[in-house]
Image 1 (tube, rainbow, N blue to C red):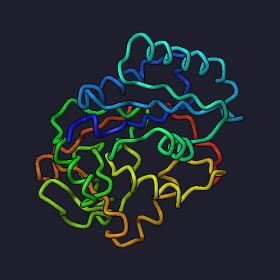
Image 2: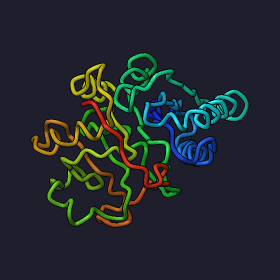
Image 3: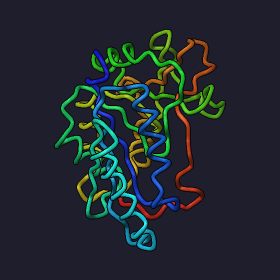
Image 4: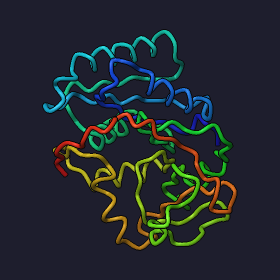
Length: 242
C-alpha cells in the first residue's frame, strides 16, 4: 500500500486567528511531508450562531484556502459547508460522498504531524486488514499515567491496545470509521466526534472497536508524532447536540 490509499480529512472551523491561514498551512505541509500522494479534504464548517462575530474573518480564511487549492497546493480539496454542521456530521457527509480509499487519516486543523519517522506501510497494512481499526499518532512522548488504565497491553510490538478514543491524528479503516459514525450520530447531531464516542468505547471490550496507539520504538517512549497549535486559544467549547 502507499499514500494514495489514504484520504486525509482535516476538520476546520472559525477560530480567533482567522483570517490567517498559517495554522492550517502548517498542518497541511506536515501531512504532505509524510503522505505525498494522499488526497486531502479540508472540511470547513459553517459558522454557528455563537461565533457570528468571526464570520467575516472566517469568510476571508475560506477564500484564501480556495486560492491555495487552485494555485498553490496539489491534491488538496477545500469543502466549505454553508451552514453549521459540526465535526461529526461534516465528516460523515464528506466520507459518504467523496472518500473512495480504503483508509482515512483524520487530522484536526491545528494538530500537525511531527517530523519524525512513521512506519506508514505497517500502519496502513494493519488498518486495511482490520487488525486494528484505528491507530492514534500520539500527542505526547509516552502515555500519561492517568490514562494507563485505558491501555490493554500490546497488540504488536509497535501497537498498544486501548479503549481510549482520541480525536488527535489517527489512521483508520474507512468503511469501519463511517459505520461507527453513522451508528453514533444522527443528521441532527452537532458535536465533536470524540465527545460522543469516547464514553461507549471506554466501557466496551477492546475487541468491540480495536483501537491502538502507535509506539514507534516499542518502548513506550519517544511516541510523539503529532502536535497541538492550540487554535482555540483558550476559547471555551459551545453547546452541543449529541
